[in-house]
Length: 414
Image (cartoon, rainbow, N blue to C red; front, side, top):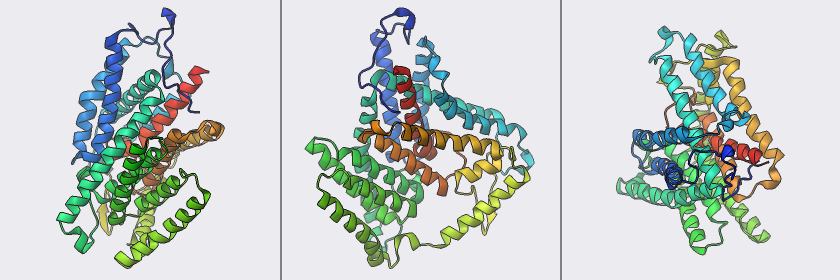
Protein backbone atom coordinates (compact mmCIF):
# COMPACT_ATOMS: atom_id res chain seq x y z
CA UNK A 1 0.00 0.00 0.00
CA UNK A 2 2.43 2.51 1.22
CA UNK A 3 5.89 2.08 -0.22
CA UNK A 4 7.39 5.38 -1.33
CA UNK A 5 11.06 6.01 -1.68
CA UNK A 6 12.70 8.43 0.73
CA UNK A 7 14.60 9.83 -2.27
CA UNK A 8 12.51 10.72 -5.31
CA UNK A 9 13.21 9.30 -8.71
CA UNK A 10 13.28 11.94 -11.46
CA UNK A 11 12.65 10.75 -15.02
CA UNK A 12 15.55 11.36 -17.41
CA UNK A 13 13.41 11.49 -20.52
CA UNK A 14 12.18 15.09 -21.03
CA UNK A 15 8.87 13.84 -22.43
CA UNK A 16 8.20 12.13 -19.09
CA UNK A 17 9.10 15.11 -16.92
CA UNK A 18 6.65 15.74 -14.10
CA UNK A 19 7.28 19.50 -14.03
CA UNK A 20 8.61 22.07 -16.43
CA UNK A 21 12.19 23.00 -15.55
CA UNK A 22 12.25 19.99 -13.27
CA UNK A 23 15.90 20.32 -12.30
CA UNK A 24 15.67 24.02 -11.47
CA UNK A 25 16.56 25.21 -7.98
CA UNK A 26 13.44 27.41 -8.00
CA UNK A 27 11.11 24.45 -8.42
CA UNK A 28 12.92 22.45 -5.76
CA UNK A 29 12.62 25.38 -3.37
CA UNK A 30 8.91 25.67 -4.11
CA UNK A 31 8.32 22.01 -3.23
CA UNK A 32 10.38 22.47 -0.07
CA UNK A 33 8.27 25.50 0.85
CA UNK A 34 5.10 23.47 0.27
CA UNK A 35 6.42 20.86 2.70
CA UNK A 36 7.17 23.59 5.23
CA UNK A 37 3.65 24.99 4.77
CA UNK A 38 2.16 21.60 5.62
CA UNK A 39 4.25 21.46 8.81
CA UNK A 40 3.25 25.02 9.75
CA UNK A 41 -0.44 24.25 9.38
CA UNK A 42 -0.18 21.07 11.46
CA UNK A 43 1.76 22.79 14.25
CA UNK A 44 -0.71 25.69 14.26
CA UNK A 45 -3.41 23.36 15.56
CA UNK A 46 -1.48 23.05 18.82
CA UNK A 47 -0.77 26.76 19.28
CA UNK A 48 -3.30 28.88 17.40
CA UNK A 49 -5.83 30.23 19.94
CA UNK A 50 -8.41 30.55 17.18
CA UNK A 51 -9.00 28.23 14.25
CA UNK A 52 -8.99 31.28 11.96
CA UNK A 53 -5.21 31.43 12.45
CA UNK A 54 -4.87 27.92 11.03
CA UNK A 55 -7.03 28.91 8.07
CA UNK A 56 -4.95 32.03 7.49
CA UNK A 57 -1.78 29.92 7.42
CA UNK A 58 -3.48 27.67 4.85
CA UNK A 59 -4.53 30.58 2.64
CA UNK A 60 -1.22 32.46 2.57
CA UNK A 61 1.20 29.52 2.34
CA UNK A 62 -0.24 26.31 0.95
CA UNK A 63 -2.81 27.65 -1.52
CA UNK A 64 -0.57 29.98 -3.58
CA UNK A 65 2.31 27.48 -3.49
CA UNK A 66 0.11 24.67 -4.80
CA UNK A 67 -1.30 26.86 -7.56
CA UNK A 68 2.23 27.73 -8.69
CA UNK A 69 3.21 24.06 -8.69
CA UNK A 70 0.13 23.21 -10.75
CA UNK A 71 1.09 25.89 -13.27
CA UNK A 72 4.51 24.25 -13.69
CA UNK A 73 3.13 20.70 -13.75
CA UNK A 74 3.33 18.76 -17.01
CA UNK A 75 2.06 15.34 -15.96
CA UNK A 76 -1.48 15.31 -14.54
CA UNK A 77 -2.05 11.56 -14.60
CA UNK A 78 -2.17 11.49 -10.82
CA UNK A 79 -5.62 13.12 -11.04
CA UNK A 80 -6.93 10.09 -12.99
CA UNK A 81 -6.68 7.60 -10.14
CA UNK A 82 -9.14 5.80 -7.95
CA UNK A 83 -7.36 7.26 -4.90
CA UNK A 84 -8.01 10.86 -5.97
CA UNK A 85 -11.59 9.97 -6.91
CA UNK A 86 -12.09 8.28 -3.53
CA UNK A 87 -10.85 11.42 -1.78
CA UNK A 88 -12.83 13.93 -3.85
CA UNK A 89 -16.16 12.25 -4.69
CA UNK A 90 -17.74 12.43 -1.18
CA UNK A 91 -17.12 16.17 -0.64
CA UNK A 92 -18.23 16.83 -4.22
CA UNK A 93 -21.53 15.02 -3.56
CA UNK A 94 -22.05 17.08 -0.42
CA UNK A 95 -21.46 20.26 -2.41
CA UNK A 96 -23.87 19.11 -5.14
CA UNK A 97 -26.53 18.42 -2.50
CA UNK A 98 -26.67 22.15 -1.75
CA UNK A 99 -28.41 22.54 -5.12
CA UNK A 100 -31.56 20.86 -3.76
CA UNK A 101 -31.36 22.23 -0.20
CA UNK A 102 -34.38 24.21 1.00
CA UNK A 103 -33.27 27.66 2.18
CA UNK A 104 -36.32 28.02 4.41
CA UNK A 105 -35.28 24.98 6.48
CA UNK A 106 -31.81 26.31 7.29
CA UNK A 107 -30.96 28.38 10.34
CA UNK A 108 -27.91 29.72 8.48
CA UNK A 109 -27.74 29.30 4.71
CA UNK A 110 -24.72 29.51 2.39
CA UNK A 111 -24.90 29.64 -1.38
CA UNK A 112 -23.73 26.50 -3.25
CA UNK A 113 -20.63 28.32 -4.50
CA UNK A 114 -19.30 28.45 -0.94
CA UNK A 115 -19.22 24.65 -0.75
CA UNK A 116 -17.70 24.16 -4.18
CA UNK A 117 -14.89 26.46 -3.00
CA UNK A 118 -14.34 24.11 -0.04
CA UNK A 119 -14.16 21.16 -2.47
CA UNK A 120 -11.45 23.08 -4.36
CA UNK A 121 -9.52 23.60 -1.11
CA UNK A 122 -9.51 19.85 -0.48
CA UNK A 123 -8.41 19.13 -4.06
CA UNK A 124 -5.54 21.61 -3.77
CA UNK A 125 -4.49 20.12 -0.43
CA UNK A 126 -4.38 16.64 -1.98
CA UNK A 127 -2.30 17.95 -4.89
CA UNK A 128 0.14 19.70 -2.56
CA UNK A 129 0.59 16.58 -0.45
CA UNK A 130 1.06 14.48 -3.58
CA UNK A 131 3.76 16.80 -4.95
CA UNK A 132 5.65 16.86 -1.64
CA UNK A 133 5.59 13.08 -1.14
CA UNK A 134 6.37 12.48 -4.80
CA UNK A 135 9.55 14.54 -4.48
CA UNK A 136 10.54 14.01 -0.85
CA UNK A 137 9.23 10.51 -0.14
CA UNK A 138 8.44 9.18 3.32
CA UNK A 139 11.09 11.42 4.85
CA UNK A 140 8.49 14.20 4.66
CA UNK A 141 6.04 12.17 6.75
CA UNK A 142 8.70 11.43 9.35
CA UNK A 143 9.54 15.14 9.44
CA UNK A 144 5.89 15.89 10.29
CA UNK A 145 6.05 13.71 13.37
CA UNK A 146 9.45 15.01 14.44
CA UNK A 147 7.95 18.50 14.47
CA UNK A 148 4.63 17.56 16.05
CA UNK A 149 6.14 15.61 18.97
CA UNK A 150 8.05 18.56 20.54
CA UNK A 151 5.42 21.10 19.47
CA UNK A 152 2.72 19.07 21.21
CA UNK A 153 4.97 18.72 24.26
CA UNK A 154 5.40 22.49 24.59
CA UNK A 155 1.69 23.07 23.93
CA UNK A 156 0.63 20.52 26.57
CA UNK A 157 3.01 21.95 29.17
CA UNK A 158 1.79 25.50 28.46
CA UNK A 159 -1.83 24.34 28.78
CA UNK A 160 -1.15 22.57 32.08
CA UNK A 161 0.66 25.63 33.47
CA UNK A 162 -2.29 27.87 32.57
CA UNK A 163 -4.66 25.31 34.07
CA UNK A 164 -2.71 25.35 37.33
CA UNK A 165 -2.56 29.15 37.43
CA UNK A 166 -6.35 29.27 37.09
CA UNK A 167 -6.78 26.90 40.04
CA UNK A 168 -7.50 23.81 37.99
CA UNK A 169 -5.43 21.53 40.20
CA UNK A 170 -7.58 22.64 43.14
CA UNK A 171 -11.12 22.32 41.81
CA UNK A 172 -10.28 19.69 39.10
CA UNK A 173 -12.48 21.29 36.47
CA UNK A 174 -12.02 20.12 32.89
CA UNK A 175 -9.01 21.58 31.09
CA UNK A 176 -9.50 23.53 27.86
CA UNK A 177 -5.99 24.11 26.51
CA UNK A 178 -4.40 27.03 24.68
CA UNK A 179 -5.59 26.26 21.12
CA UNK A 180 -8.84 25.79 19.18
CA UNK A 181 -10.71 28.37 21.28
CA UNK A 182 -10.05 26.25 24.35
CA UNK A 183 -12.75 23.76 23.34
CA UNK A 184 -12.47 20.90 25.84
CA UNK A 185 -13.48 18.08 23.51
CA UNK A 186 -11.48 19.23 20.48
CA UNK A 187 -8.26 19.90 22.38
CA UNK A 188 -8.58 16.66 24.32
CA UNK A 189 -8.74 14.74 21.06
CA UNK A 190 -5.87 16.80 19.65
CA UNK A 191 -3.63 15.53 22.46
CA UNK A 192 -4.98 12.03 21.91
CA UNK A 193 -3.48 12.19 18.42
CA UNK A 194 -0.28 13.62 19.89
CA UNK A 195 0.02 10.66 22.26
CA UNK A 196 -0.07 8.43 19.20
CA UNK A 197 2.60 10.48 17.42
CA UNK A 198 4.88 10.06 20.43
CA UNK A 199 4.81 6.30 19.91
CA UNK A 200 6.81 6.77 16.73
CA UNK A 201 9.47 8.75 18.58
CA UNK A 202 9.84 5.86 21.02
CA UNK A 203 10.89 3.58 18.15
CA UNK A 204 13.80 5.79 17.04
CA UNK A 205 17.37 4.81 17.75
CA UNK A 206 18.23 8.29 19.01
CA UNK A 207 18.17 8.37 22.82
CA UNK A 208 17.37 12.10 22.71
CA UNK A 209 14.24 11.53 20.64
CA UNK A 210 13.12 8.63 22.83
CA UNK A 211 13.38 10.86 25.93
CA UNK A 212 11.55 13.74 24.24
CA UNK A 213 8.83 11.36 23.04
CA UNK A 214 8.43 9.78 26.48
CA UNK A 215 8.11 13.23 28.09
CA UNK A 216 5.65 14.33 25.40
CA UNK A 217 3.57 11.16 25.84
CA UNK A 218 3.42 11.77 29.59
CA UNK A 219 2.42 15.43 29.08
CA UNK A 220 -0.34 14.57 26.62
CA UNK A 221 -1.74 11.79 28.79
CA UNK A 222 -1.70 14.12 31.81
CA UNK A 223 -3.61 16.72 29.80
CA UNK A 224 -6.14 14.11 28.70
CA UNK A 225 -6.52 12.90 32.30
CA UNK A 226 -7.63 16.37 33.38
CA UNK A 227 -9.78 16.89 30.30
CA UNK A 228 -12.03 14.08 31.60
CA UNK A 229 -13.20 13.54 28.01
CA UNK A 230 -14.16 10.01 27.04
CA UNK A 231 -12.82 9.59 23.52
CA UNK A 232 -9.42 11.18 24.30
CA UNK A 233 -9.17 8.81 27.26
CA UNK A 234 -9.72 5.86 24.91
CA UNK A 235 -7.19 7.34 22.49
CA UNK A 236 -4.61 7.79 25.27
CA UNK A 237 -5.07 4.22 26.52
CA UNK A 238 -4.66 2.84 22.99
CA UNK A 239 -1.59 5.04 22.44
CA UNK A 240 -0.06 3.78 25.70
CA UNK A 241 -0.70 0.18 24.69
CA UNK A 242 0.76 0.99 21.28
CA UNK A 243 3.84 2.45 23.00
CA UNK A 244 4.24 -0.74 25.02
CA UNK A 245 4.64 -2.60 21.73
CA UNK A 246 7.87 -0.66 21.10
CA UNK A 247 9.54 -2.42 24.03
CA UNK A 248 11.69 -5.46 23.43
CA UNK A 249 11.00 -7.41 26.61
CA UNK A 250 7.86 -9.54 26.66
CA UNK A 251 7.81 -9.45 30.47
CA UNK A 252 7.98 -5.65 30.49
CA UNK A 253 5.19 -5.51 27.93
CA UNK A 254 2.92 -7.72 30.03
CA UNK A 255 3.58 -5.80 33.24
CA UNK A 256 2.99 -2.40 31.62
CA UNK A 257 -0.24 -3.54 29.99
CA UNK A 258 -1.56 -4.62 33.39
CA UNK A 259 -0.40 -1.35 34.97
CA UNK A 260 -2.15 0.74 32.29
CA UNK A 261 -5.38 -1.25 32.52
CA UNK A 262 -5.43 -0.88 36.32
CA UNK A 263 -4.01 2.63 36.71
CA UNK A 264 -6.48 4.52 34.52
CA UNK A 265 -9.71 3.54 36.33
CA UNK A 266 -7.98 3.66 39.72
CA UNK A 267 -6.65 7.16 39.06
CA UNK A 268 -10.07 8.46 38.04
CA UNK A 269 -11.75 6.83 41.00
CA UNK A 270 -9.30 8.43 43.43
CA UNK A 271 -9.27 11.90 41.82
CA UNK A 272 -12.85 12.34 40.67
CA UNK A 273 -14.82 9.61 42.42
CA UNK A 274 -16.00 8.09 39.12
CA UNK A 275 -14.73 5.71 36.51
CA UNK A 276 -13.55 7.52 33.36
CA UNK A 277 -16.12 6.27 30.86
CA UNK A 278 -19.00 6.58 33.34
CA UNK A 279 -18.54 10.30 33.99
CA UNK A 280 -21.40 12.41 32.66
CA UNK A 281 -23.20 9.24 31.59
CA UNK A 282 -26.05 11.32 30.14
CA UNK A 283 -23.71 12.04 27.20
CA UNK A 284 -24.57 8.58 25.88
CA UNK A 285 -28.36 9.00 26.03
CA UNK A 286 -28.20 12.54 24.63
CA UNK A 287 -26.23 11.33 21.61
CA UNK A 288 -28.78 8.62 20.91
CA UNK A 289 -31.54 11.24 21.00
CA UNK A 290 -29.46 13.54 18.78
CA UNK A 291 -28.88 10.83 16.19
CA UNK A 292 -32.56 9.88 16.20
CA UNK A 293 -33.55 13.52 15.73
CA UNK A 294 -31.09 14.02 12.88
CA UNK A 295 -32.21 10.85 11.12
CA UNK A 296 -35.73 12.26 10.87
CA UNK A 297 -34.39 14.35 7.99
CA UNK A 298 -32.89 11.23 6.45
CA UNK A 299 -36.27 9.48 6.62
CA UNK A 300 -37.88 12.32 4.67
CA UNK A 301 -35.51 11.84 1.71
CA UNK A 302 -33.42 8.72 2.22
CA UNK A 303 -31.78 8.51 -1.22
CA UNK A 304 -30.41 12.02 -1.73
CA UNK A 305 -31.14 13.69 1.63
CA UNK A 306 -32.50 17.16 2.24
CA UNK A 307 -29.48 18.93 0.79
CA UNK A 308 -26.58 20.48 2.66
CA UNK A 309 -27.26 23.76 4.45
CA UNK A 310 -24.71 25.68 6.48
CA UNK A 311 -26.54 25.34 9.80
CA UNK A 312 -29.62 23.29 10.62
CA UNK A 313 -29.77 23.30 14.41
CA UNK A 314 -31.21 20.42 16.40
CA UNK A 315 -33.54 21.25 19.29
CA UNK A 316 -33.08 18.70 22.05
CA UNK A 317 -33.45 20.11 25.59
CA UNK A 318 -31.04 22.71 24.24
CA UNK A 319 -30.11 23.86 20.74
CA UNK A 320 -27.18 21.95 19.23
CA UNK A 321 -25.47 22.69 15.90
CA UNK A 322 -24.95 19.10 14.73
CA UNK A 323 -25.65 15.48 15.78
CA UNK A 324 -22.08 14.68 16.95
CA UNK A 325 -21.67 11.96 14.34
CA UNK A 326 -20.42 12.82 10.88
CA UNK A 327 -22.08 9.85 9.17
CA UNK A 328 -25.47 10.73 10.67
CA UNK A 329 -25.00 14.33 9.57
CA UNK A 330 -24.07 13.20 6.05
CA UNK A 331 -27.14 10.93 5.97
CA UNK A 332 -29.54 13.76 6.80
CA UNK A 333 -28.03 16.11 4.21
CA UNK A 334 -26.96 13.76 1.40
CA UNK A 335 -28.86 10.51 2.01
CA UNK A 336 -27.70 7.08 0.91
CA UNK A 337 -25.84 8.69 -2.00
CA UNK A 338 -23.39 10.62 0.17
CA UNK A 339 -23.30 8.02 2.91
CA UNK A 340 -22.20 5.33 0.44
CA UNK A 341 -19.38 7.54 -0.84
CA UNK A 342 -18.03 8.16 2.66
CA UNK A 343 -18.35 4.51 3.63
CA UNK A 344 -16.36 3.68 0.49
CA UNK A 345 -13.56 5.92 1.79
CA UNK A 346 -13.40 3.82 4.96
CA UNK A 347 -13.59 0.55 3.02
CA UNK A 348 -10.92 1.67 0.54
CA UNK A 349 -8.46 2.46 3.32
CA UNK A 350 -9.26 -0.76 5.17
CA UNK A 351 -8.93 -2.98 2.11
CA UNK A 352 -5.67 -1.36 1.02
CA UNK A 353 -4.18 -1.76 4.50
CA UNK A 354 -5.16 -5.43 4.57
CA UNK A 355 -3.78 -6.00 1.08
CA UNK A 356 -0.36 -4.54 1.95
CA UNK A 357 -0.05 -5.25 5.67
CA UNK A 358 3.38 -6.86 5.20
CA UNK A 359 4.84 -3.51 4.16
CA UNK A 360 3.55 -1.56 7.16
CA UNK A 361 6.34 -0.22 9.35
CA UNK A 362 6.12 1.97 12.47
CA UNK A 363 5.83 5.19 10.49
CA UNK A 364 2.92 3.96 8.39
CA UNK A 365 1.29 2.34 11.42
CA UNK A 366 1.15 5.73 13.14
CA UNK A 367 -0.57 7.28 10.13
CA UNK A 368 -3.04 4.39 9.97
CA UNK A 369 -3.65 4.91 13.69
CA UNK A 370 -4.09 8.65 13.08
CA UNK A 371 -6.85 7.92 10.57
CA UNK A 372 -8.44 5.34 12.88
CA UNK A 373 -8.41 7.74 15.83
CA UNK A 374 -9.88 10.42 13.57
CA UNK A 375 -12.77 8.24 12.44
CA UNK A 376 -13.49 7.34 16.09
CA UNK A 377 -13.56 11.02 17.03
CA UNK A 378 -15.75 11.90 14.05
CA UNK A 379 -18.29 9.23 14.97
CA UNK A 380 -18.94 10.73 18.40
CA UNK A 381 -18.34 14.44 18.00
CA UNK A 382 -18.17 15.89 14.47
CA UNK A 383 -20.55 17.23 11.86
CA UNK A 384 -20.38 16.66 8.10
CA UNK A 385 -16.74 17.27 7.15
CA UNK A 386 -17.03 19.65 4.17
CA UNK A 387 -15.62 22.69 5.97
CA UNK A 388 -12.80 25.19 5.85
CA UNK A 389 -9.53 23.90 7.36
CA UNK A 390 -10.54 23.26 10.97
CA UNK A 391 -10.35 20.43 13.48
CA UNK A 392 -12.06 18.03 11.04
CA UNK A 393 -9.18 18.43 8.62
CA UNK A 394 -6.75 17.35 11.33
CA UNK A 395 -9.01 14.50 12.44
CA UNK A 396 -10.02 13.16 9.04
CA UNK A 397 -8.96 14.76 5.75
CA UNK A 398 -5.22 15.02 6.43
CA UNK A 399 -4.58 11.38 7.48
CA UNK A 400 -6.97 10.13 4.77
CA UNK A 401 -5.06 12.09 2.12
CA UNK A 402 -1.73 10.72 3.40
CA UNK A 403 -2.87 7.10 3.17
CA UNK A 404 -4.39 7.53 -0.28
CA UNK A 405 -1.38 9.40 -1.67
CA UNK A 406 0.98 6.72 -0.35
CA UNK A 407 -1.12 4.07 -2.03
CA UNK A 408 -1.19 6.04 -5.27
CA UNK A 409 2.58 6.61 -5.32
CA UNK A 410 3.21 2.93 -4.73
CA UNK A 411 1.01 2.02 -7.68
CA UNK A 412 2.81 4.61 -9.83
CA UNK A 413 6.22 3.13 -8.97
CA UNK A 414 5.00 -0.32 -9.94
